[in-house]
Length: 302
Length: 302
Image (cartoon, rainbow over all chains, first blue to last red):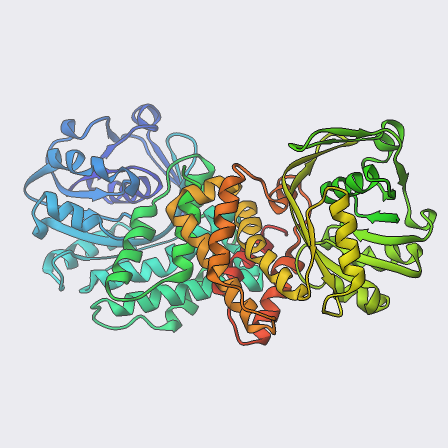
């Protein structure tokens, strides 16, 4: 399979490297890492074993990449206004597009610009970050759940999940992509925002009873909002408990939004906060703590 | 009148200076500023006119200060465990104690250690901060509302308010001190915490619609909690609107808690957050946003 990676940050580099190692032809759109990767290749450190790809196909612009079978989108959502122009040159008649971006609104943006039937979404529960140019660190986790934007299970989604699994990526196809997205938000909304706002890692927030209670209360607000959408089945409060247990096991983790703020980048507020708040409000649910967190994060962006 | 100032930060230095200028014998307990003030006196800058006091009575310890007519307490509440031992040496049979400290619990602490009938509380709406040693900057406002801890109007409270007014301090005696305290919390709880947490001055919070809405929502939570206590009259939502108008006029103000955090000092979380939350809970009121703000501020203290 030929795969074009649009948005080769920690997520795009890591999954792209695994897919290339499994024999696929992967073409990376690169900015910061272009020189390092085209010269010296791409190195992955991982608890599953480090590896190095000596020859990597790097491009500075997508209109030099050619058409591919699959576009994998890992772009930060604050750059989504560039997404249609970046993706368009990669599309042949049969090309599918899988966005693994955070939050809500990404599949909708792709579907509005291209054919909705091309679009898949996925949520990646991945702890990774970029090292020096040419290096990506996989820290923990890595599971992907993907599904068709138009809903339901498809043969294509099943086969794509199998392809990912063959490359060493735990992956499953899901019929209800919105449910998977909201489940991811149950994690992203408390941890991304609270860590970015306070500068504290996940373990510090969970170690203090008061902030641990806030994490849980925010998760419950998100679950209430999620269950007011038309999901195939409700998200249980037990899911929140599992997320907290899993995050405790991750140790001193710095969520992507905390890193974005520390490094002076914009935050993914639209996808992770504004749109979920709007969808909640459309269904009559006020997420009080989430709105406060969003307001305080937004104030820091000015 | 002889007046002992315990806690000569920006508030204690400013009011003490005004009282000395009006002819009272003021004795200051000093730490950081002891050398500068005992050598060169105390300088006050103010929109009402700068002035300099050449001879100031500074002490390093209260047991050298002698008995006074009035103890004026301006100590940061995070140092309240020292308060009884600091105040005791200043007390003669008729000495009264006025605490102008932030938040709840200060009069109670003094009453528990001394005679409740000695204790007055006051709220100071004062924008001031310390400059270099020996200098205090008065920026804006300065009104004091004071009252008896044991409640009701008293001839003493009236005469003390008159003494303060004669010294150029706008002051009035109030019968319902708890109401005045909660009114001050309507300002302190949103602005102290939000500015300390975000590092943004009051004008920035009020300029953005989302944070302005949060300020108002937090004020409404505090008003609901206040009105569940046994106050002589309810605090109106119009009071919150007045506080926002007044704060807008203050420009780019840095509340004391924001300065405390920036300078690495502890925050006055017990008096301004924990006790008000406990009093609200005792009356069945949950202050959702206030609890979240408290948790996030507390997490940053570790």
